[in-house]
Amino acid sequence: LATELYGLGALDLLLEEGQRVGTITDIYVNSPCDIWMGINGTTRTVALSLGNERRVRELAERLICRYGGQLDATHPAA
Image (cartoon, rainbow, N blue to C red; front, top):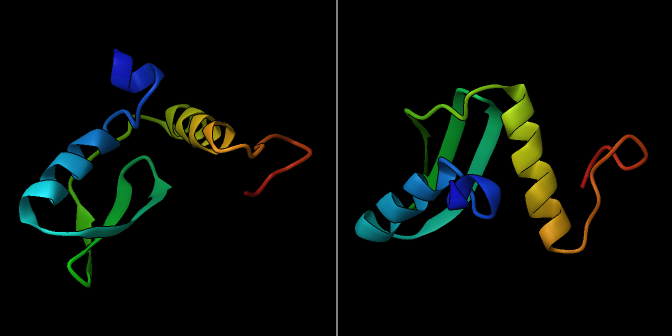
């Protein structure tokens, strides 16, 4: 529950995996089930689902707000 409310949710699993196998440079979320990870210089798709579009949006808003940004109708990109 804490990772869903304050952390990266299911993306925390990718970070844990990355720490075991190398260096993560990027995580791309194109849709709830289209997620890619850049690790050790290679970008690959990962078998992970974030549930639905609403959960992806909530995660994006939480991360952007955490670092001082804004994501809403007046600021659709960050």
